Amino acid sequence: MSISRATAFRGSLKTPTTQVHPRKWRREFPILADSTYLISHSMGAMPRGAYDSLQQYGREWATRGIQAWDEWVPRLRETADLIGSLFGAPPGSVAMHQNVSTLLAIVISAIVQPGGRRKVVTTDLNFPSLHYNWLMQERLGLRLHVVKSPDGIEIPTDAMVSAVDGETLAVLVDHGIFRSGYLQDVGAIARACREKGAHCIVDAYQTVGCVPMDVKEWGVDFLIGGSHKWLCGGPGAAYLYARPDLIPSLEPRICGWFSHKRPFAFEMTMDFADDAMRFATGTPNIPGIMAARAGIEIVSQVGVPRIRERSVRLTSRLIELALEDGLTVRSPRDDRYRSGVVCLDFPGADAAEKELLRKKIQVDYRPNCGLRVSPHFYTEEDELFSILPEIRKIRKRR
Ligand SMILES: Cc1ncc(COP(=O)(O)O)c(C=O)c1O
Image (cartoon, rainbow, N blue to C red; front, side):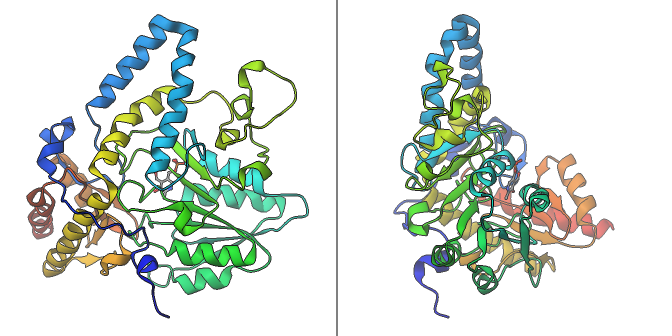
């Protein structure tokens, strides 16, 4: 099968003309002053601007009381649109919520119809939280088709594509696999979904802010993700993109007054908002959303194509060096199929996580994966590669 340039990269291809200079950004992130921060795939560093936003939130709440909603509601919409601009979503097509598990539940409540399709395609490498949501729907008659990874790293695109048939309600595609960093071919899977009339839902939590992408280019129906990884936004600011032409036909059973066209009219009949706000349910998490703003703005300024260019360069060098040290690399070697994280395994990797954390080298360990290590735009090259001598020392002591 020939691989087109767009699908080969598994993200959107806009080649950056200039490079990222980490030094320019490091002072914005206090934790970088005294720790080796290689964990942005899990929890991005906090920008100092988040302090200001949280103080602003406290000030507005304290001094404006109920009137603070006049600022907070427009800010909620602005933040949703700003996040959407990172993956090509038009204004009004993104709603925010506290976490993606809830957002998936809302999507499920909108697409599962009495007497409708029942088959859902997922993989055994998907993030478990969302998988639980599907599993609980089996009580309502949903049938899961779980595509198995042959090696714990990759999911064959052909297996995903051929699993989609005329009975398929939805496919949940984890764009970047959390356990390996493998990038799924969303474009090819979304095409199969369109051909068979299935919904394509992308979980891009592991890639937004690190891998360029465009929901329109992919032609997906939904994209979900959150802010506390590559967007450096902290917890509590997840988002859902819904394809604008699909929105009017969707009436989520999980809803609330913020899903209403006129929430402050307190009407007793439902008239859904015309845009993605219909997925917003009840009172939004204003502090989480305000805290997330600074990180999202910085990532937008740095530019995701530039972040990607540097990430690929550094992670491919990290893989070369790790292999020279005899470590097992549980991430794709081919740059095109790898997100921003590299998984390094060796006997005792779980215990090594704690030793590294004691030395303020921030990485994490996941079973069947090893240590997950990643650079972001604020990571110096030496800082990234300094993990290897540390791992060498730990292994020698065993
Ligand atoms: C791929 C993926 N999806 C979802 C989540 C989180 O889901 P939630 O926002 O429901 O906690 C994570 C990690 O935190 C993840 O890696």
